[in-house]
Length: 147
Image (cartoon, rainbow, N blue to C red; front, top):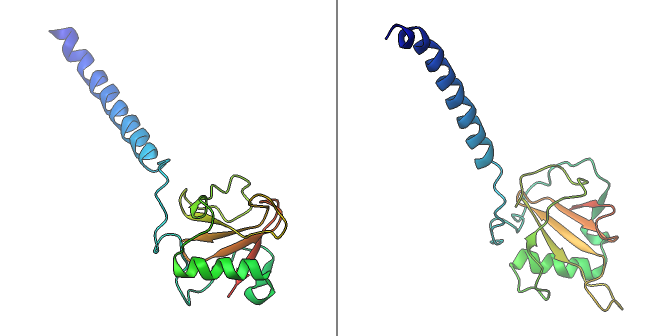
């Protein structure tokens, strides 16, 4: 019984440390969900008139985008329908060229490329806060679209 009394404070301390470590690990895992929810009108489409967040990337005015990009932007504003199955999927920002955000924040849309037999290299990337980015070289570089 004496041995148990002497070791009890140590056991309690070890148990407390384990609880803290477990709670921290669970909290970290909960914030790192890999679920990719389907885009909705509120999650993928910029709010009309929303102020464009500052990214530090080069910019381009909507009027300076190719006509196909302006047409795609109009479809995004309407919520579709989109001509490509992959339009609206989560964009992972794997290149880390866009401002860092949680997974699911960005969604990508195809900008048709005349003469291309596939989706081509051009995309619009739309953030949940109304930020829009254009790439014409399949994610090698981006310009932030200013409305």
